[in-house]
Length: 114
Ligand code: FES
Image (cartoon, rainbow, N blue to C red; front, top):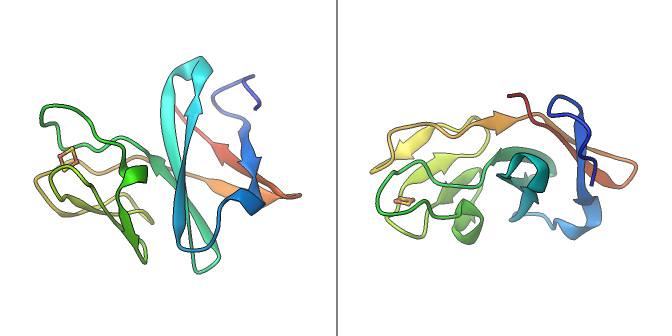
């Protein structure tokens, strides 16, 4: 994994390891940041892995249920659109951060902009 800068593309792993209609979590150790990538209809979407609900603890959305571009948090049922981070149903009220992501030469590359 590339760890040079927060504004350059980061290599998350093999594109083939992310099947259609699924989501994988990745941990960027140098900036201690969890990001998830979903593939829906062949399109990749990158977003913060931790739910914004703010209750007892932050639950990982990558463990939730993906239905189209909607992901449901397993903890309290918040719904988010992974395409733009929007909250579709609470209790969460804060949108998820989303990031540019692409596949190139068999690798998933994400750009985390601070
Ligand atoms: S932690 Fe996700 S809905 Fe509460």
